[in-house]
Amino acid sequence: FKIFWIYVLPITFQVLVSLEDLNLESSVVPVGVVWSIAGAILYACYMVFLKHKVPTEDRMDFTMFFGFVGFFNTIILWPGFPLLDVFGWETFQLPNLQHLFYMSVNGLVGTVLSELLWLWGCFLTSSLMATLSLSLTIPLTMFVDIWLKGIKYSLLIYIGAIPMMTSFIAVSLLTHYESWDPLMDGMKYLHRKCWRRNHMYR
Picture 1 (cartoon, rainbow, N blue to C red):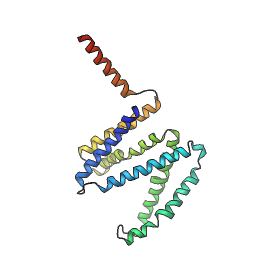
Picture 2: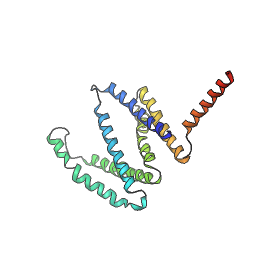
Picture 3: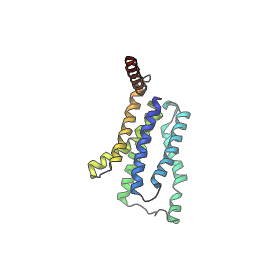
Picture 4: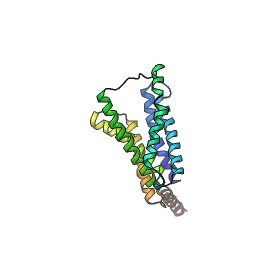
């Protein structure tokens, strides 16, 4: 039961963001939400299958793993760029030197390093903990946009960031104290209080 309410908090955040996205886009179902859900499903499958096949980090060669990731991206995803250009869905053009530099830095830091740290954290803790840490990029990106760019978000976005941060803190505490269920303890406490009060009135 304690894991259930931790799942509910991030879903609440996603629902609030989706409601705000409905106000920003004219379509009934925002395209970004659909792609986000599809990506979340694929990422969950990838995470669960990886943890199932490789339970400990000692059984995995990180160099070979990321090598195969790059190999399959090259032979499966890269051929799709010309097709997107042919059908007019996305214009394909070669980047200049500045864009190439930014893409290289983003690939090394934002993809390779972050994926390596995430994978390492997944083995050291759990797949749930690692995934929730990735979800923190949403509220942290929002705070950086506010600080550096002065972007203003609606109240729903701020409210939605609270359950996301709360769920990560809750999972951290419950991982450390495995036998502790604060929600159930709180419900039992309220039940005892109500039972004593009813008993006194009788």
